[in-house]
Amino acid sequence: MNNTSTNKSRQRKIGKVVSTQMTSTIVVSVDSFITHPIYKKKIRKTRRFLVHDPDNTAKLGDVITIEESRPISKLKRWVVVVDQKKIQDIKS
Picture 1 (cartoon, helix red, strand yellow):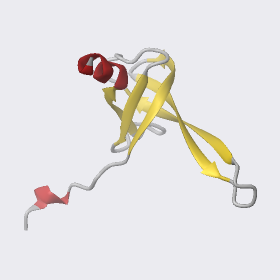
Picture 2: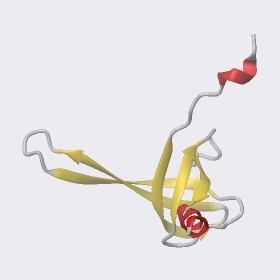
Picture 3: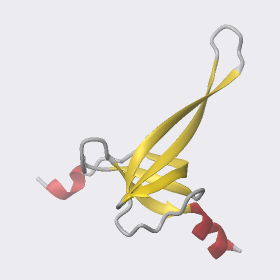
């Protein structure tokens, strides 16, 4: 059996950096919209994730992509994958 092919796909989310005050950790706010079952109105749900940023590259207000990872600490289970601003700069 080949154990290298057991890699499962990890969940990715796009969010905005709302805090960078901790060392190698940032707080990212991710918005999702759900539809109310009766009134059919869109409702915004906001979740905040503690994200591992080992190089401290993210700045306040940046839009970044985060990915699931192994537990890094008690509350950190996400890592920074790519900065969306840098992608837009490269494309233009």
